[in-house]
Image (cartoon, rainbow, N blue to C red; front, side, top):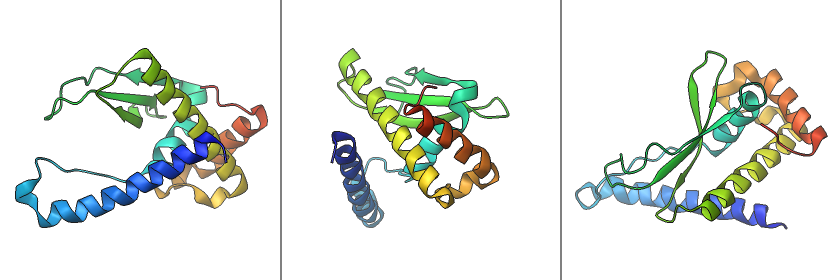
Length: 152
């Protein structure tokens, strides 16, 4: 297994932890400052696949210190067919440097490429939120797989 797959496994373990944390937060609301979590890992990578080749991607770090716990937040975004900004993966870290952001971008690139391979092999794995665009999404996945690289 390569490092990207290990990172994906780490992400899956993190999701399992967050599910357990969600139960804890629900049962101990008086002990939790703020808890909101939405699990949509496939959707964020599929959104990037669907829109990035035609409309590009953005790197939005303007949300630094603007949330309730002042955490540094960086979004990768794209634009949908209605010209609306659509969020992709989010990087939250107190260690925001050129090296960590580069690492984040490489991980996102690897995960988008893996998602493209999954969609080419299993076209039915399209997230329900993107079912209306399934044909276009699989077409974009084929382009990435044939090029052997995601180039937004």
